[in-house]
Image (cartoon, rainbow, N blue to C red; front, top):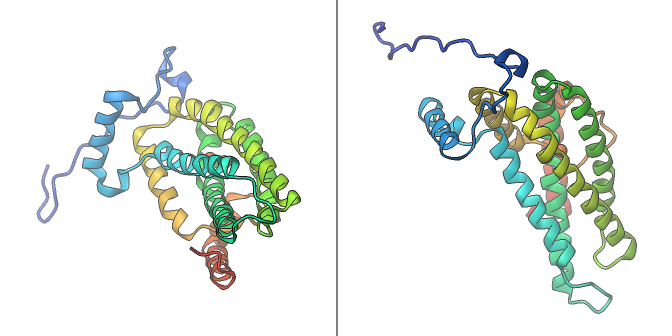
Length: 242
Ligand SMILES: [Fe+2]
Ligand SMILES: [Fe+2]
C-alpha cells in the first residue's frame, strides 16, 4: 500500500507469542543461534538500520568479554612489591580504573534496562533478577573500595581478588542461568530494541559504582545523566579518565 509522500507501508507482523507456555511444548529460543540466527540479525539490520547492529545478548557479551579479559590480565600480572617498576604500578592502577569504569557502566545499564525485561518476560524472572542484583550490589561495594586501590598493597590486592572471584560467579550466573531463559521468550525485535537502548545508555552511564543508591530502575533513569556527568568530571579531576 502506498500513500503520497510515504514509503511503502508494511502490513503489521502477525502477533507472536512471547511466553513459552503460549508457544506450545517445544520451547525453542526466539532468537536462534548459528546461520539461522545470523540471517535473522541481517534481516533486522536491514529493517532497523544501525539500531539493530547488536542485540541485547551481543551488547552484554561484548562487555563481559572485556571485563573477563581485564580480570585475567590483573590476575596473571607479575606480583608487585615495593621494588616494582613505577610504570608497572601505574599500568596496574589504570587497569583497575578501567575495570571500575566498565563494570559500573555495565551493571548500571543492566539494572536500568535488562532486569526489568527479565522480570517481565521470563517465568521466575523476579527470583533470577533479585539474585543477580544482590550479587551486583555486593560487587559495587568492592568496586567502591577499589577506587582507593594501591598496587602491591596487600589489602588492596585482596579486595581486587575477592571482587574478581565474585564477578566471575555473577557473570556465569547471567550467562548460564539467565540468558538461556530469556532467549526462549524474547523476540528478535525486542532483543534488538533492548540492545540499542543499552548501547545508548552506556554513553551516559555512571562510571563509578554508587553502592548507596538503591538499585531501582526508575531512580537511575532519572539520575543517570547527571550522575554519569558528575562521575566523568571527577574522573577528569582525579586523572581516572583515560
Ligand atoms: Fe550484572
Ligand atoms: Fe552482565
